[in-house]
Image 1 (tube, rainbow, N blue to C red):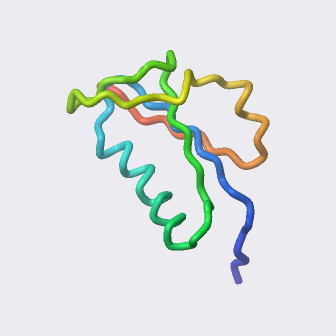
Image 2 (cartoon, one colour):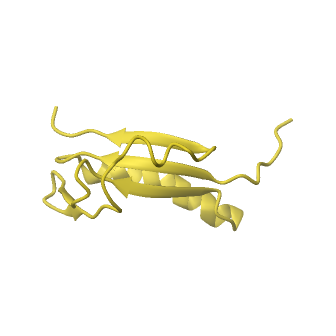
Length: 89
């Protein structure tokens, strides 16, 4: 039987230029929904870009970032996933 975890999962989302909005939403919305249904913060996400600046999407809507993506300073968290959203193919 599965046991409920009380540990929050942090997710670093690296958004590359020319990604699409549906891809970003498909990562964030299930997490947001799970938080809402559970009544607690099971998941927390942080949006990063290669240089820390907002990146344009294929819809010409810029996605703001919480800073530049860095490999070292955020890895110290015990519970962290890294997700990369694509750019032009």
